[in-house]
Length: 177
Image (tube, rainbow, N blue to C red):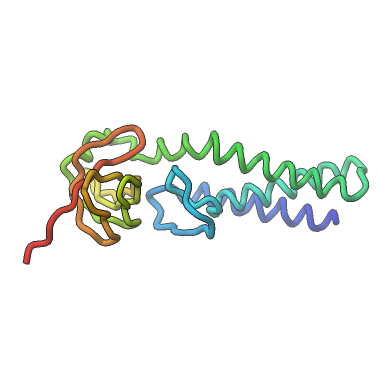
């Protein structure tokens, strides 16, 4: 089993470094993950979350295997470490990274008045995701809410009316015939 822990540890490290270098937050065009979306706009099983779990399983299993524990001790330790690291990542690190990805060169207030497009439909009384270009020309993805009386489907044109710490508030831009 030691080889499995070492392989998981190595794959996890490589995937975490790759995610850190290539990015998954906002600026990258990544739609990875196979889970449902949570309140932060990133799929539950995003590349970074999965890599964190694989790394945790390898680290916890390999560490307890080196201590000489018999099976199933290392498997349980690996699973517990994986879940703990994933919870730490999702609960502490990811919210911080998502706040930081909102282009540090421009205030979020500078987004007001910009046009964009809905990427993930915005349901009534819910949130979705929009894409727009910031004043510096960078592509930005953001969680969005709308006070419109109807849902805004994907590919709808939008106008940003306000921003807060968590959401960009938008209205639909009617198509001109």
